[in-house]
Image (tube, rainbow over all chains, first blue to last red; front, side, top):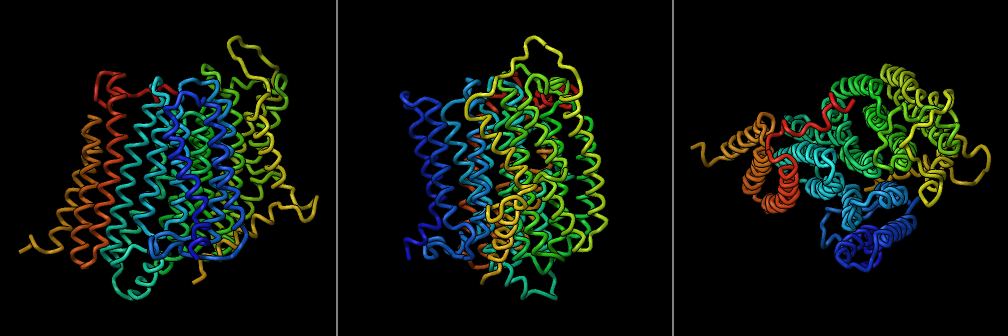
Length: 501
Length: 106
């Protein structure tokens, strides 16, 4: 009994002990940065390997209930999200190898913080209690703040770090205030019990719980950078080192959605429709403002940051439809997270590879005629841009397809139309890059040194590019090989595991 | 007799939280911003302890303890960042730090 429960928690234990071990080893001179990078990779791979054992099975359990009460939960849902977070971290560490080698200002503690951040995100998905979720959120964010400001010789990094720290802490206090109010109203903070207590209160005044949950949603909207709280996104993404940006954009969002979906689907189910109108307004504003911001940017990194706001808008369309089309909408959120994660990770990773030399600013103009000089990199970048824009035969298209069908199924045809219009406009800023790369003659500028393809980073990015296309055309070519259908089916399965009592 | 009721504690906690929020929004000194955030966290702590007594449940008190621990961890990051920022510009005025502002970066 004890051993099965330890097995459930093993990925968490591996990552946490790996982080502690790396922190203790960091003063030892004998181990180089490369050694640490490899060690991080091995730990993440080990945790992912353990996680895969439980992948695709339908179960739910409270590990070591005597010790943790019901604060932690392990079910197919959390296993799915764990796999996403761990593979995101794995890809980040692979993409980062090149970047961390070139830039000499990273110290070995960076990898320890990185693993702590991964641990926090995994704990967030496993959290079955509001305060546990808050602690997990803080573990993940605090490590992230330090990771952003790690190169403290740059003004940009430290200021981005401070900005994110202040705003993140404020949104964190709102989460705490929200859980205090929910605790006031219901007398418990354990997720399963919240729902039951709320059911018992039906027909009575629940305004305290509504206010508390709204405060928690404020934190959620802040962390995924939805409309009223989106201003930090561009600055912080621009100010942080590129591998960290990739990690934040793809992986952190996955973890946040993992927790909030659990909260909304199970516990706040009886009062969920209160926020419908609010969310419709938030979605429209997010799509509109994100698109506007993305159009006016000249730096590629800032454009990707702004477009991540638009992608948040798409995700929220599915989020608002879970009230009326629970299963298809939830699995479409999970699948879209995979799709966005692959494309964004690829794009950010490739740009970090190109920009590892510090003085390149990576504006659109830098890519003029890029395809004539570096055809492979240009092809990969085009694949990611096509996927982000949602062009058929890439995984981004399949993700958007599921989101919009889910929205129409739920009766939000208007939102689906708005989303599709935003997609049309997004073609402008994604295709501007492709057009610049292919349809203009190369202009040789002195001082721009772009590394040739070598090492593990380009291979990783190439594999991601293939995965993006594979997700789009997948199962039509080779039957019985895992593709999109497999991912969608396991997403459905993990959704079902939430309702096992 | 308002002082001994739960209502009194909630009012005080909310007032402290609002003061903290106002401080974050209106003050320019990065150190005062940090202190305001601590004020917000401790207002919630007060709320947790009051509610724990009201519900007759140790959970509220435990939560307050955990929040204090988190606030300490946050203080570590905050203070070190404030020192780094101060060393760069020899100032604590948040207006001095505008490397990332839209105007210059676009």
